Length: 480
Ligand code: MN
Image 1 (cartoon, rainbow, N blue to C red):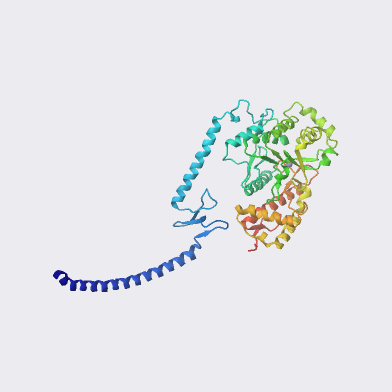
Image 2: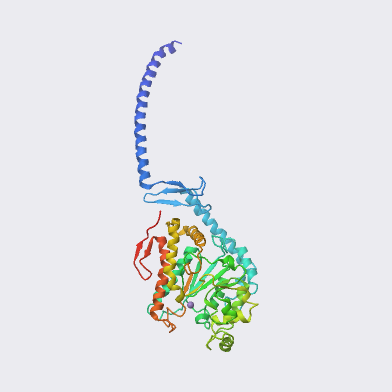
């Protein structure tokens, strides 16, 4: 008791001292805390001003699906979750992403190993061939099995459309025309641009894969080889090196061709009534990757230089097609011949397209570019949303929107940008143009078509040429 009594005053002193010290300490802390808060506020404001909003939800995503911006000493890094449309990422998330990716790769390898061991692996068959002259039997079934055993490879695009492999090519030697190689580069760039914009694979060949199948016949062995090299491709789109895609937004209406195995540009009447060798154009076509096409390639190439029938067919073709001069058998006449003479077997599966420029004869088409541009500009002025800026990868949505307004405005073949402009007879590489055309018309036409197409690509990059024959550009005035 005593000790407690004697301790009481001492305790009181200590408590009062402590209280005084605590009060002073608390005052100090409040002051310090206030200062820190002010500093933090200043720092936050400075961060917001210097880097902008550092975490923002995306349109159409829920709150858990946000982009996180990782702060680097010198830059800002945005990581996306590979398993979701968008996902939260952190440093450890980055490791997780890498782990998921490597697991995916392992998974792909497992499928490949399984295929390698499988009895269905037709690539391992002793009679497997990439060449015409040796067909692959039951190709449809074989492709189906391949697709089944490769679930990680899709035969359709992100947009859900059947996958197209774009195939083109040119000769293996340098061009004789001094401007030829530069022109071919630009013709190729045009196709490469289109494929990048639409997520398509492109194969450019510049070697003769069958020594006898020369000139316009060279594409047939190539298409045949590409069919088996790309079982994931539903369609092969052959496009001559002298053809330019001049509507960079348009896509083939594949739904329309669902009951057909081949699509060419032409006119039924010219094929079946006039029996003209110009009834269709064989320089641009779509062919389905299927057994029918495998057989058709065999039949078609049997009229080419690899076949003993090649010489007699020079006359046979001209007998059947009255407007054809007696010259060596050519792929286009052979195609028209098969459509007429073996209609039931082949023609019922060949769609003759002319509702749009599946391929357009350059002399008819090159003078329409300015009018098409004017028509599109009017449409954009009526609907300013079409004048907005967007990222290249956002293209599909904006293309759909454009397509909607084109349809609404009743755009027909004469208002739309021609899909493909084909410079038949201009021979950009060799320079041996058909003498019915002036060299200047061919050159100027190609320049205009290439620039017209390239301007549509440059639009995404914010620039536009001063004219279709100009190599100067200016920034585009967009609507916000
Ligand atoms: Mn051509």
